[in-house]
Length: 212
Image (cartoon, rainbow, N blue to C red; front, side, top):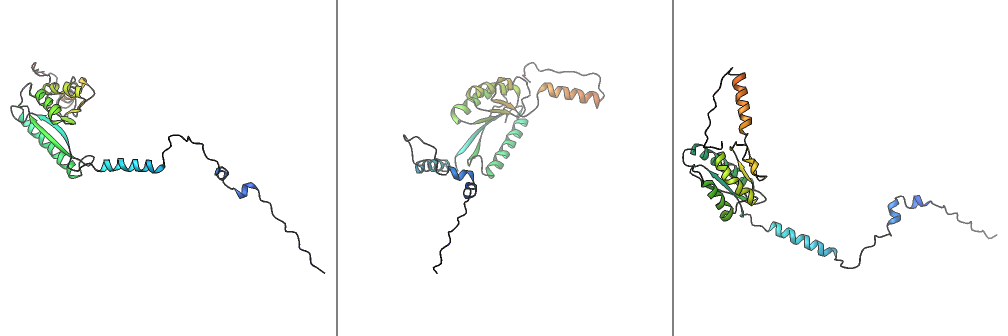
């Protein structure tokens, strides 16, 4: 008796089992892309590498110049000298930590001699000759008002540490201050005099020659 082979029963599997992930059913479908002006991927990689080489090829000794105008001499020198010392300390600390964007900072200092008109001259020199990217100063409101319009016109940020006149920062959006304004400090001083000193009368002294 010749044994007969039994038919092999094949188990049918559902499409959900053979392709468990829906995205597999789309693996053979590609998004049509334009055939014209196509550039190989290697071109884009090379271009990216080229830009990186330009970025890191900048010399580490390059300097970012910041101008600082103050009253180092003259009647207001006691304020000017201390402000410049503080600025130099900040520059040294920043450079010791690697500078800014891999470049060191250079503080270009100039003295207005506590004289009217000198700050405007120094600011023009900062902008036209030294090519600074920012200006620190001046200290007084009158001197700062000489520099503020020039910095605003050149789109170079100017930061004053102690010019309290309200009109200073109204020159434009490139002029800043790191101190309070006169109206604010006036209210605080008056409140202190009334609440803590129990004062009932006060005297206001005004220097009509100063914007302060």
